[in-house]
Length: 339
Ligand code: KG4
Ligand code: ZN
Image (cartoon, rainbow, N blue to C red):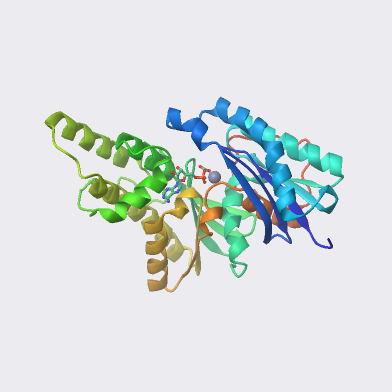
């Protein structure tokens, strides 16, 4: 096989994932073993349990990824793995495995920043994307607004001061008795209701690029408690629609204000919450109204996966070469490499 073939591993949270990508863009396989059922009884990810599950799952997942791609170890030209940010136990397992495979197969290894992975999910489906761009990365662990000057060169404009957007979806869904993870359930329920419940009083961070979701979450929880004490029923579809509307309002206000201030032509969404239909639709509409191109990854590349890590690893290796085999796992790894 006379091309670049990247094998990537992603183990930073609760998905054990491996993917094979040819020439940085052609997805030959994308295998994701989710631990969702194992964490569901706890209503969130339990780090120690996640690490044990990664250890069980990673070899079968790698075998499956190679098999589905129709490639063998000798075809792999680069091994990539997430080295942060994320949960230390899981990161160590994927990172150590990737280094071991690179050593055994005598090919280079490259460490990938998970957030750069999420951003790069966009490049798989949309090769036409050109920096500079504004990228909103919204997941269970992150809400970051970035100015992307070039691939690998980012400036963090703002981030959440408390809960991540996905975390807020998960906590609100749990309070509403809708189960875990909350994002997809609220996404399904919201269109069946009306966004007619006022939850937000004021935007304390107006004018900044930072986000805050904990006040919104508390407003929902208080409303549910009051209703329970008074013995009145809450219209859950209306509450889901109102909560989602408030989250998306805040996300898009910052994103498009940044797009105008930094005079970019291109806005990217990434991360698990980028799967949200209201966020996608309204972002497209607003982008169109402002003459901006809006991109988001196909659904399977929004939530954690290894194809996005392979895409980022391929670009990073071309730009900066291989990583050292001494590269550590860094739970709070920052994205601003080249300031
Ligand atoms: O990117 P991801 O798989 O993992 C992290 O890196 O955190 O994101 C998972 C998060 C969860 O909080 C989940 O509730 C949220 O993404 N999510 C959604 C949707 N699908 C997943 N949030 C809103 N709407 C969705 N459709
Ligand atoms: Zn993620």
